[in-house]
Length: 133
Length: 370
Image: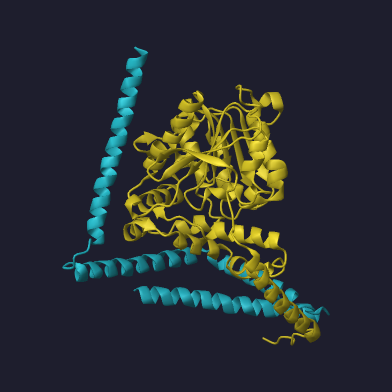
């Protein structure tokens, strides 16, 4: 699925690039027809950047592109998750801490820290009230 | 398609290429003269820390003329030193020169140990801790909050939940209404599987976010910028400033998975803030509870946080003293542009000075769109 999504995405970028280049050439042709000349490399470069940027922006802002990108991300994350699971299986018998084990540990530390912070706040509030009383 | 054959002035182009080579050789020489790309050089002291989050207090070398301290809250994305990127263009130094007493939050770089941090931890935990520290140490019940970008969203939510602790609220280029799709990030985020993103990475790498930012303007940000750089490499100061900006752009902290998931799901996708449906740590965020004076600043050509996402805040708050300020420029221009230094920073300082004793906009004529 990832390969299909990736190919689809790359194709979209490729086609947009081709279209953008066609538009650049059209813009140059238009200049020549109207008697203008591309005098410097900078002039050509600016034209190429501006036209290409615009063309890509028009594609990037479509719902179709956003969906395609989202699907590509989703499928690449899926590949990554499977790879991580596979690595955990390989490493299970080795004397190293696995990521899932570290996740558990992080969760415990996080929960404890939160509990301590809440208790500190409560203590602070109670001692504040007592001081006022 | 029939197309006229492009005629070019070959002599000019050969000359351009020769010149380009000369500049590239010179650039290598200039680069060897740059020892260190220094950023965030305004003197400051670490005054409070909770876990990785740090609170710094800037040293005021002149007189403090605005009694109420200001806490600057930057986004979790990128680093807060953009406000003090280069000594001669520094919002921080500018505000200090205008007599403000400044504090700034440094969210630091989350590691996998921070993967479970939520918006509740950042806002009700760390931010509230920083605010309470300043209140306690300065003796002010209320302080000024200045939130930037995502930090502005955080500050607005904080001000809605703790109005008794906030004297004045200033937001800069911050998103509140996430429904418009005129910014590409807003359009793209709506189709992102936030659950899978957080679950897979735990802490989403800064580089992942950077790729997204660079894709917003792929030709300008990946090609033109570096070609244009060749024109300034002979000037050491200009090159140094270019490198400072590059350092900032690519100095992207990772994002705690749980927090980013919440932000994408409830804000970008659910647009819950303007609907009044956001709850942070069980506390409802009702923007109408923001009753203190509000200065909401947006940038007219902001492609990261378009004006359409910032401006609605003024219609959603309960404040009667509220100002909307249009900065002519883009997102980054707000921090390092010349207008930012000459006009915007002095304006913010003036706005805060006028409200340090509970003054209202009516006295100064600063209400409405400025």
